[in-house]
Image (cartoon, rainbow, N blue to C red):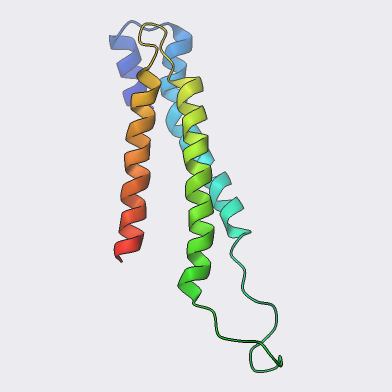
Amino acid sequence: MILGGALGEASGMTFEQKSGFILFPLLVHSLDLIVSTIGIFFVKTKPGLPSLKEGYGEFEDPLEILKKGYYISLFLALVGLYFICLTFLNIPAFPNAYLWFFACSVIGVIVSFLCIMIT
């Protein structure tokens, strides 16, 4: 937030433009909370206990169940990040600057995805 304010002040932006750079980190972290909460709702196993339910089938891999929620969270995060960048980091003097900020966000999401897949 401080860096966004200093960047806006040094570049001579209007108050509305500076406020977008200041609020951006708060919005991204709010998006994290919302997306994580939605992803949790997609983490489900088969109903019932395998030892008590006849015809339960094969055991599920817990990591695959968690990955499903993670993939949904990643997709929602990318969509949300695009709209946050478009709304709050859109500078009229540089009309496509928000795409560069979004590209940085996408790189961060890809790195996090690769860290999960590698480990």
